[in-house]
Length: 84
Image 1 (spheres, rainbow, N blue to C red):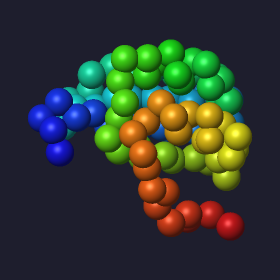
Image 2 (tube, one colour):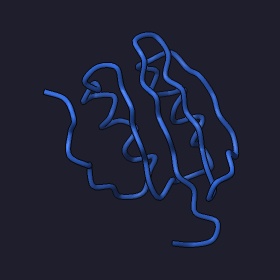
Image 3 (spheres, helix red, strand yellow):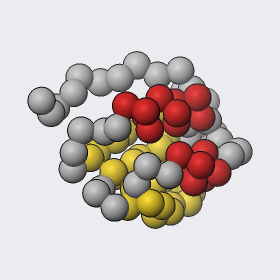
Image 4 (cartoon, helix red, strand yellow):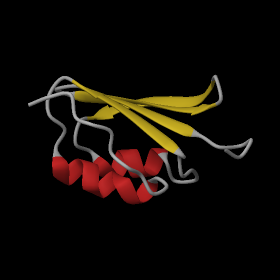
């Protein structure tokens, strides 16, 4: 993995989504945006394409939301889902 690679963590809540961009063990920046606001997530990532994405959610993530943020990240392979 390149030395300047970044990782994105999303915590998707009922009303707010918290985002954090990491480089190794350092938080580069973070934000809280309304859940489902794809534009806010894309703006947060405007200059970055994370190598990895970790997602936590209180509910099953909205597939439309997920498909719209995916182009902002490097090609990804979803992990097995932990919800029914």
